[in-house]
Image 1 (spheres, rainbow, N blue to C red):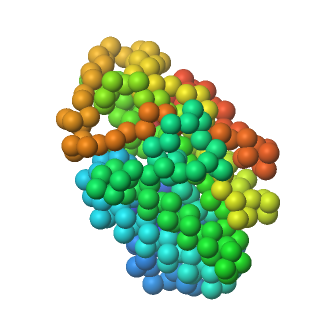
Image 2: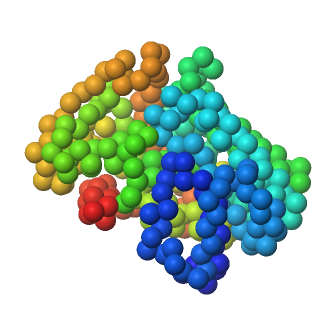
Length: 298
């Protein structure tokens, strides 16, 4: 809308809230349809009249993935299928947001788009999300190859920012909420697992640049920060940045999740392809990410 475009949002708000859009909800160029993508009666017409589609609909959060694997798989696969069908009918360009989870159990120190992928066994529901999002990628790129659909895939690494909820297991909003309330910050496992976090404004900028460039079509791009930190150190940093007195508690995986839960020890992206192609590299420092998220969330 800032660039003069009209925007239509289709969202069933199953893991979000329209309150997140209250700053722009009355904008004349914003149209919001409260529906699942697959149940939106106007989907074909909307796609036909769109210049570009950002496909962001997916099951989100470790809690949801672990406890609702059927919903996770069906949401990720079916909603993507109907979007690609609608876009394919008029060859409307699509940006598909995928996930760092597709790298699975790989032990590489940093993940590149050309890496082989190692998914865990199907009897551990933990991997249903990774597998379903990977199938989304395969389907999108199949549409690109077979039908000439202009597609770009963005693998997102832990996007964080204001108004994000910790309800479904997202670690940073959980830590911030606890620190602001003076409650214990609960670290699952030994806390040595590492992650990289990307401020939402950086992620949005990257997605817009990927959308605007014709060089990205048919490609897969990592989108994420590269400031690696252990979850234990992240908890300590949140406490320090917010001036909190909250203690840090360690919770065994066996108490936090179902038996057999497997976690990735590292999840760091290589973002050189993103920089080479669209001249952008997410760079907001983690302490600023924490402060912005805490302050702007109220």
